[in-house]
Amino acid sequence: MNLFERRILLIIVSGILVLLVASPVLSRLLVFPRTEFFTEFWILDSNHGTKDYPLNVTLSHDYNVFLGIANRLGHCAFYSVEVKFRNQTQSAPNRFNHTSSSLPALFNISAFVADEDVMEQSLTLSFVYQYNESLSRVEFHSLELNGIKLDFHTMITGDKENGFPGFLFFELWIYNGTNSSFQYHDRFLSLRLNMTV
Image (cartoon, rainbow, N blue to C red; front, side, top):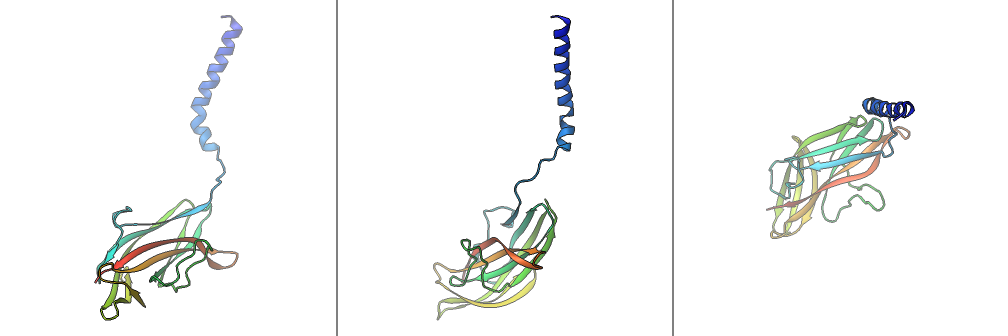
């Protein structure tokens, strides 16, 4: 190997070593633009999982779930979660038309969530209802959410064998600074609850 070939080899090896040593520093300096902006929205069971959601609900018993929001929008966002309850015939959010339910909110959970930050809140739920045997229906009186009593009245039809299905759902709304109002963010979560008597 002559002197020229040795210099070329030394330059190539030195260049590779410089790149290997500098790569951690370069990765911190080179910032690639984000291409996806979205909001994560979830509900987890009392064990922070997805297997033990409350299903068969009994009168005045406490049930725990976790509600979470992760902001991946690229800026701080002001969220509002509307808590609603419906029976089989009442309106649900419509994914096809991107519209929220027309039912009034029983409760609102509001939070500012910084970009790339997560807000998770524990919710304790308890239902107060009465079984009307002659009409074969459950008559709802209230929902207790984290110790706050929320009065509302609705009827759920069904039977003792199959239960009385109701739906507790959470609609995600986001504040639009241009309009100075909250807008439905086209995301909702629903828990199907079977009222037992």
